[in-house]
Every structure is written in C-alpha cells, then in structure tokens.
Image (cartoon, rainbow, N blue to C red; front, side, top):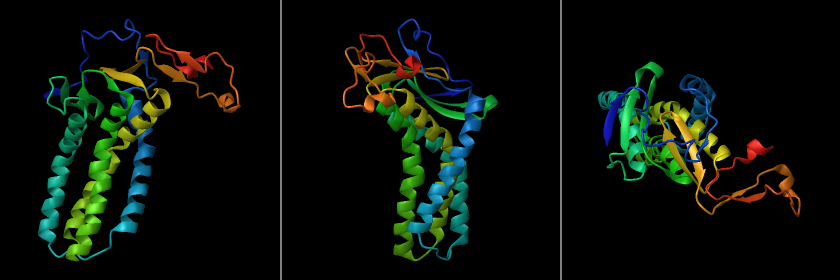
Amino acid sequence: MRFHLGAIPESPDFHPEEEGWQSLREPSPLVFQLWALPVAILNVVVLAILWKALVPSLPIKNGALAGIGVLIVLLSFILVHEIIHAVTAPGWGLSNHTLIGAWPQKFVFYAHYDGAMSRNRFILVFAMPFLLLSVVPILIAAFAARLTQDGTIPVILQFLVFINGLCACGDILGIAMFARQIPASAQVRNQGWRTFWKMEEGSEVVCRLPVCRLPVCRLPVCRLPVAGVPVMLDDLI
C-alpha cells in the first residue's frame, strides 16, 4: 500500500480506448460532490430510522469517556474509511497497486487500486466502509446499550454512524452508477478519476430494453455475444 497527495494518478501503461474499454458516464469530481449531497441526506434519514428502531435512549454515565471517544472517531474515521476500501480491493491492500490519497484541491480523500477487478468486487469495495462503519455499529450499539444500560458507548458509535454516513454519500452514488451502467460480468478499471469497463472474452450483454419483457424478443441486440468489444446497450437506444 502506498500514500499519495494530489490527483488520482494515471497508469502510464493503461490505454483504455486503444484496448477496447468503455468509459463510464460520470461527472467531474466537483459535480459528483454536488450530486452526492442529496444522497448524504438520504443516508442520514435511513440511518436515523434504523438507530431509532434498534437502539434504546439511555443516559450517558461517563461523559469524559464519551468525549474522548467522539474525538478519536473524528480524527481517525476518514483514514479508517479509506483503509477499508483499500483492503477490500484485490490483494487486500498489500499490493503495490493499492494507494490511499488526498486531493485537497477537490476536497477528496480516496483509495485507489491500479488494476482491473470484477464489477461486483468493485461495488463491494465501495460499499464496505458504509456497511462496517455505519450499519454494523448500529447493531453493536443496540447490543451494548441493552448489556450495560449505559449510553456512553452508543453515543460514540452514533457519532461514527452518522458522520461516516454523510461522508459515504459518494460511495453510494458511485454504486448506483456502476450498477446502472456496467454489466455484472464486466471487468472494471480506473484511469485516474475516470472509470472504464470491458466485457470478458466470450461473455454476453443481456438486453435490458423495456420491450424485452415480451414473451419472445427478436431484437438483434438483446443477447449480443461480445468478442473483446464492449457494448453499452443504452447507447444503442
């Protein structure tokens, strides 16, 4: 694992257009951040509903410990968030292809894997910090509250759940974009900020056109064998 300051570095030996990779339709970093704001609100609403339903409200018996815990979370959660991204990538974060970086000009922290992976692995990489730092802590807080009858641990975890939920809005937006645009059997790779995908040799793209709900679909693009040439059916409409 390496550390990098600045824009996500590009791979000099990766030429996606020349090698038949299809570009994901995605906005610039700044526009992406703006698009992610409504997702941040939705994340908080969903997490608040889960917290209210599962975690009882209890008095805090150790305010000093709660304050120290919240401070530790505030200072470390971004690094932990990115490390979780990194260790979910191929090589479990131990490969030289993995790096963690900060891009101050765009207000972006990131984990980057300089190599190809499956679409589903790519989605898992994006989802794991939200699951481990926002969903699982709710379950832990519910258990701790009932076990100790003390709100100290739950309030620390509550801060982690919501601040990570806010910051994971870009991850959730990215997952939606990948699931919408990239076939499940495709390989995915980044070149700097941009994302590219490519079908594996001999795989097929399954048509998702609304007319394919007919009992028999005779459109020639519905099951198009791919021999190293990526096809995005949305572009054929």
